[in-house]
Image (cartoon, rainbow, N blue to C red; front, side):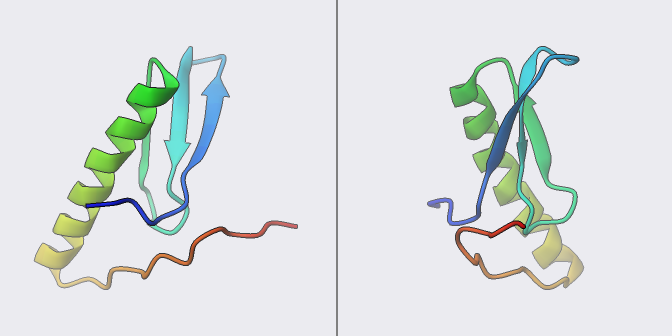
Length: 70
């Protein structure tokens, strides 16, 4: 499944890892030792988030693409 949700990737000095947030999916966040690992972990967690939402009968947000912040 291709990722269509925006990923925000930042480096955490405190955790010494990359942190990935998926703002369109509440609570969807993951980390990884490398950038590539963090993004790969995000792909897995996005799939699990969607699967859990389906099982619970919760709505799944449509990807909006790039989000704009002020």
